[in-house]
Image (cartoon, rainbow, N blue to C red; front, side, top):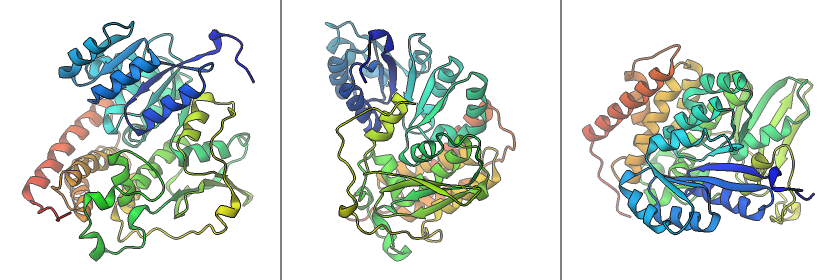
Length: 399
């Protein structure tokens, strides 16, 4: 199907364009020049790649969050028509541009929350790759999306799978959803093994190529825990309607079970470009040349129960969802600090769960948080987590 005119082109803001999801989003945009235009690119501190992307895609705006990198980006793009901005406030403001159709939020962590809120209030559809936004403030975001009639289009492969399975099923209640997890690089390992793993071990995901933070989250199963909380808000579910199973091949991306017992699953090779393309092109499925799945290459698909005792983070996420209020915000902030500490050789792999659990116990609980409560909870939890790391020095393992 051809696009008839430039008026049909969707203008996209890619928040976090230099990360794993951001770069793959730009690949999808490059493959569909008659459909999508990268109108805004933002990056945290990777100025070199942002410059390279701006030269290739010629967006109207390029925003670098680190203000001390502004001059570098501005000078490199001085001969172009790209307008260069700097600072987090500019990221929060740029999403309200009237010409934007979709804001793809691929920023890492809590930083994605306020730009997403502003984009929703401005009536922009959200292609959501920043799961922390719904983990932290799912009730707030979903209420705003309904108020402003904005679509929340999931980009995570698991939530995209559920979203696709629900197409045409609006009148049929969900009995439960099943989120699949690869199990990460440490599937089947015990605590004795995990006590000795290094960040280099944890960064070797068997199926997916991702950024460092989400790769560590996948190794600890916190990523799946965050997806459980995100799924609750995306699909308006109760805790008991969400199940997790380990599926090492990462071919079935997730399933929906309806009230009659029928199940739908979405299958495909592990490739983030497919859910990205589906979100940007929704409701249309766009023809592509991506590699196709071959059943004969995967004659055996296997499934296991997750080990909640060894991989404590997944259990903590279920506990946080059950508690509600600001508890998911607490575990998200604590996890971000713990992962950064692990990547800096300041925290052991198992120590990440200890820090998160300590924060859950020590931080004040707020039953019905406002945006101000979320912002304060995030700030105070990070301070607490950092103090916990300093009080328990960790001797880095030899790589």
